[in-house]
Amino acid sequence: MPKNDVSMSVVRRLPRYLRYLEELEKKGVCKISSKELAESMGLTASQVRQDFNHFGGFGLQGYGYSVSSLKDKIIGILGVNKKTKCILVGAGNLGRALLNIKFDKLGFDLIGVFDVDKEIVGKKVSSFTILDYSDIEEFCLNNNPVLAVITTPSSVVESIATKLAALGIKAFWNFSHFDLSKKFPDLNVENVHLNDSLITLSYLIKESMD
Amino acid sequence: MPKNDVSMSVVRRLPRYLRYLEELEKKGVCKISSKELAESMGLTASQVRQDFNHFGGFGLQGYGYSVSSLKDKIIGILGVNKKTKCILVGAGNLGRALLNIKFDKLGFDLIGVFDVDKEIVGKKVSSFTILDYSDIEEFCLNNNPVLAVITTPSSVVESIATKLAALGIKAFWNFSHFDLSKKFPDLNVENVHLNDSLITLSYLIKESMD
DNA sequence: TAGATTGTTAATCGATTAACAATC
DNA sequence: TAGATTGTTAATCGATTAACAATC
Image (cartoon, rainbow over all chains, first blue to last red; front, side):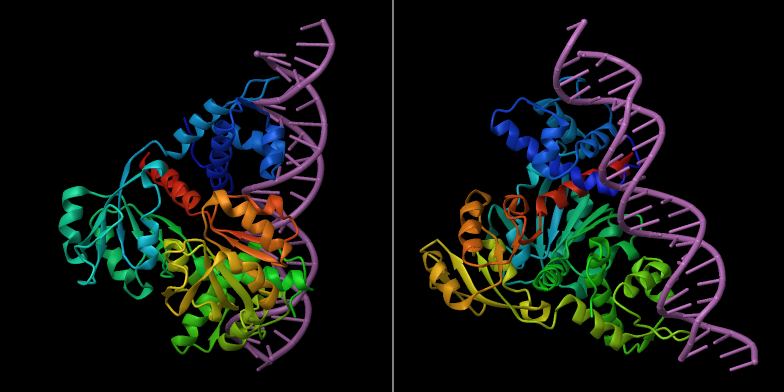
C-alpha cells in the first residue's frame, strides 16, 4: 500500500523504474540488486533502496529484488492497472499524435476525442471518431471522465478548463502554456511544456560549447 | 554573461521566466518586482532574486526589474537568439506534430526532416519536404546540424544516434525510451518521456482520491 | 530624505549519500 | 555458517527560504 506524501522527486523516478524493470523482465532477468539497478539507471544503490522503502520493503535481504514482484508493486503504486476514464480536447497535429499512446497500458481509458473544427468532426483518426466540442458537456455528464488531455491553443484553454472543472474533471494533462495549476490549485495538473524543454537544450548546447 | 555550473533546477526555471516576462511585456507591463513575479509564478521572491543573481545583477535596488531588459538577459542566457541548426528524424505523427513548433523562436533552425518510409519521402508537411533517411549521412556532412530531434521507434534509436554522433551531432531532443544519456554521456540529451508524464498523473490522481 | 526593493549572506529545510545492523 | 544485500538510521550535500545591509 502506498503511503502518502512521497516527494515528487521520488514519484517521478517511479515510471523510470517501471520501464527498466519491464526491460529486465523482457530479457528474462528474474532478480536484481539495488546496486545493479542503480548502475543501469544512473542512480545510487542507496537512492534505489530509499525510494522503494517509501512504499514498504520490497526486497529480500541478502538476495535483492524479484524483478516481477517489484514491477507489480510499482504498477500498483502508480495505478497503471487502473482504467481511469479520460478525454482529449484538441485534435490538431499534437492531439492526433497523442492518440497513438497506449492509454490503456498507462492506467487510462480514452473515451472521447473532441475538436471545434467542423471539418474534422465525425472523421476517424486511429480508432477514434472526432466528436463535436459543443457536445462535450452532455458527454461528460453521461460518462464522467476524470482526466482531460488539453491539446488546444493556449488562448482557449482557460474557458475549456473552467467548463470541464465544473463538469467534474479532476486532472489535466496540459500541453498548453496556460497556467492551469494557478487557476485550479485543487486539481491534478501535469504540464508538458515542449517549448521549455527545447529551450533548455538550447542553453545546454550553448554551455557545452564554451 | 552566464556563469557556469548553474544547477538544473535553476536552468529549468529560466524558460518559465521567459514566458511570464513575454506575457507581461505583451500586457504593457514595464517594471516588476521579485515579489510580484514570484507570486504570479508560484515561487518565492528570494528564489527569483537568487535565480537571477546566478547570472549577475539584473535589477535596480529600490525599483525592481525592467521587464524588457530582464527578458533580453534571459534570452541571451538561454541562447534563444541563436539559430542552431537541427534536423528531425522520424516523420510519424509525433514528428509531424513537432513541425508546428516555432524552432526559430526557440534558438534553432530546422534544416531537414527525415524518414525511412518511401511512402512519405518527398512529400511536403508544413513547409518541410520529407527527406530520405538513407541520405542523412551526406546531408550532415554538407550541413553540419548540431541537434537531432528523435521521434522514431525506440528500437531503431541506438543505430540512428550512433550514426549521428559519428557525424558530429552534439545534442538530442529524445522522444524515445532509448537511454541516450547512458550511451552518449558527452552529448547533450533532453528526454521527453510522454508516457512517464502520463503515468505520474495516474499516481497523482490515485493519491488525490484517498 | 524616506521608502522600496535589490543583492547577498546566513539559516533552514529536504533530498541524496554513506554507513551499518538486521537477516536471508 | 559465511557472504551478500536489504532496510534504516545518521551524515552530508545542495537548494530554498529568511534576513538584512546596500542603494536606488
